[in-house]
Image (cartoon, helix red, strand yellow):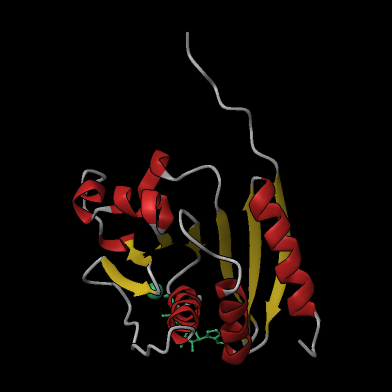
Length: 172
Ligand SMILES: Nc1ncnc2c1ncn2[C@@H]1O[C@H](COP(=O)(O)OP(=O)(O)O)[C@@H](O)[C@H]1O
Ligand SMILES: [Mg+2]
């Protein structure tokens, strides 16, 4: 007998990011809602702002524990890891992944079990992307960016709602 998981509900919210400072603000806000076993998939073309957003998120998590790091793009290393107060953070850029088997070598399975995983070019993971995740697609619009947040599963649906409300609140 084959078990087929029921389809997950999802919620999508659009957030306008007028300038890099607003991208940073979204990253900082995301840092307040993520934790272990969370997966954030960052979709979008080269230069869309995937690394910028991941950097703001990671630096905010590190800052809580008094740490400061550069957070370079994982373009060539494919994966950069951090630890924020016991939370392992994996920042992956799969653009240069040559074969899906490489995912095992990168240790992303471990990341899925015990840490926070941020993935640029998540399409390279094919069927290995967990269903319950946050998708963020970034797109150039004029001088700024449009972020489309899709939360899959109840927990992410709720968090996406909170983030969009908070981003819309100019005084937050
Ligand atoms: N909201 C924004 N509006 C305009 N430019 C932005 C915004 N967010 C980020 N940027 C800029 O866009 C570029 C994105 O580069 P990067 O984050 O490396 O993109 P990617 O990882 O998607 O290839 C950076 O130069 C960054 O300063
Ligand atoms: Mg990048």
